[in-house]
Length: 313
Figure (cartoon, rainbow, N blue to C red):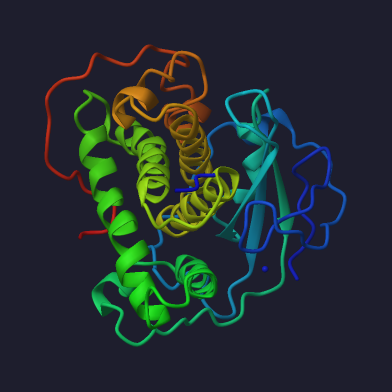
């Protein structure tokens, strides 16, 4: 087993970073230079309440890419860049409000989105495929094709690889992460953020424990970060600050799973809140000052059930 989107220029950040396409480190042409936003722009960050669509970003809709840079040394084995797309007007241009010593956010403009329709491969359950965002679907197609090249005799088709290797870890762990996060007495938005870290942890664990897994440790970590990013940008399309923090938590949750193979993911991720690797304060409440920063989370309690807010499985 081996573990291993043209919009107007936005004034948001001090430095222009190179954004990604579908991977946490995939290069793309750099955006225009940007300068720092006024501090007041970080207060009262509001989001449009437009309905979320699994087909986001829809054809003809201008979008913004936000990149998050994570330096080595804060629980990650290597420098990571994570990218997410959000609709223009969602508030994603204020991503730098989430900057911290551990994560640096930069927003860039992109061209109008083109069609993202990705049909289900033959044999893939349509309900499962329908629960995925277009980016998640593209990732799975690429990885299933890669898997077939590595193991040409193990599965006959791309669809069978998706069914047998990827469907259960993705579908099941989204629900498991939410249920496990609900075991802690947290406000709904905080529980949701905690679930981001748990999802990253569980996903890494499932992939790396598969006796027929084909990626090295670092490659597995990059894949999990990419899948968490793809899920977060669709689930939080009109709440980008939550989506970015969810993605951050998922990245660190996966990294913790890569270094600790035995501790329960809920315990592992929850215990990392005081040290700052996992952040669960709702960024929108934090921006308006209604939630005290750094308040310790309550002790875990027995729980259950799937709170609202995610896909229904």
